[in-house]
Image: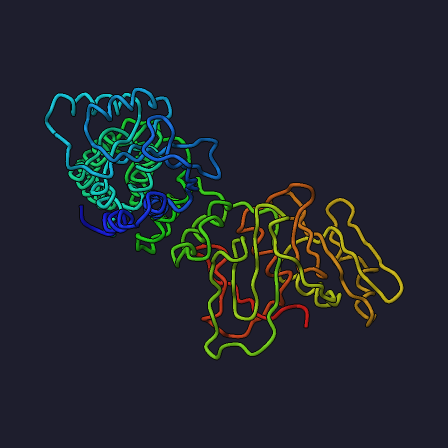
Length: 468
């Protein structure tokens, strides 16, 4: 045995008491399993090398299942097969801590291979784990993750290396629309993964295939590939692919939801912006909250970029940031503002080119609400126009009619834009209205400080907050 995992196991065996040796072994195995799947939760048991009691229990926060891990100090295939008959129903992982007794061509070995696949159990050893964990390219990390979740059969070092190499070749082939390496990669995966994880790999390769313009009909797999990409797989695409092709990212994002993007976390990289911009009409958000930032701006200006911050999809510009969430409760706490002047609101509504259906105006001692009837626009109301001349009139909230037929309510006291009840809006609609209503439109010529809210159109220049 060589490598970090094997070194950790050898170090564990050097402790002077059995309890410390066992605990260190379990800790080393737990760490390597978590390095392959950071989302897995590993629980140690009080047992060790027991026939039917597991050494470790794997669980996933979003899945109602567990996978049991049995550590084995003897790799005799007959003994392993006998143990497997007892624990087969749990589809376990049996990790051989010593593979020196393995006989790759013996009848007992072949029977063990057949029994492991039938039971959907994974039997493997440290050298194979090293192959999956070795840093190569990101697709191998997806393979390691898939093996932990749904690996099956007897996977030794040679099988692990072959599967990893096939996965690398298959991913590259998907980028270049080459069918045969993908077919080989999927065949290799089928030898060591259950159906769920095989479907996952097929979806991943097909997403890249179709992103590059390949058709679903010509993709070299007969599997039923319904369902969206998993978060880890989407993260892989964002981390590895380099293209500015809007159509590529639009194909990739056809079934992606806002929650999936937020789950990627702050380290999602620059490709997140490309994916978002290409799918603004598909990504739905419940509401937005906009914050102004006081202080000096950078001399060169800063192009507004999409990212993930505070568990929301965020658009950060030069002196401001807008948060978008699929649930209103996910938006960050608001900062109380003083509202905007009626004159500024009228100017902003006219520049936005929308119809205001309702407005609430705060004055020193009372509040006034004006609601349009039918298709009328509150901006055209003479009573509303008279409020412009009053210095104490501040717009608290305004509702505007969106192209989708829903009303969007902009609350200037909290910097929030949201619809009624559970209404959701596509980002191209919500971002344009929310950001432009809650921030003052600026026409200063700062070409590097733009917000491209509709891909392929001229950027909208937005800078100064309405509130001071």
